[in-house]
Length: 62
Image (cartoon, rainbow, N blue to C red; front, top):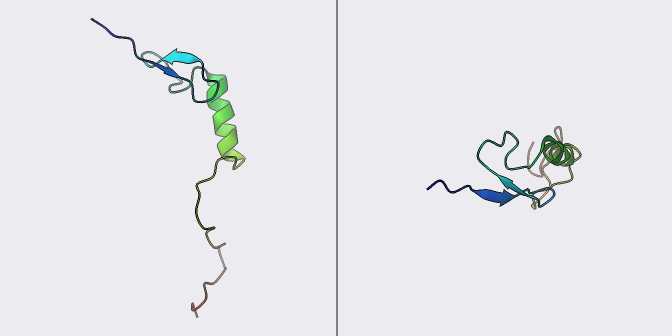
């Protein structure tokens, strides 16, 4: 038996197959590009302390 694995697109939540899908885990190029744009616009963030800007010195760095 060949079971077809289906998942929900992380962008639009539409069900899509993994096998033979060049855009996986997305359902289409459109959803893939929307997600890429969100990353590029810094719409997704990883929680934590802000990293120092280049040129900024930490206290005690002399």
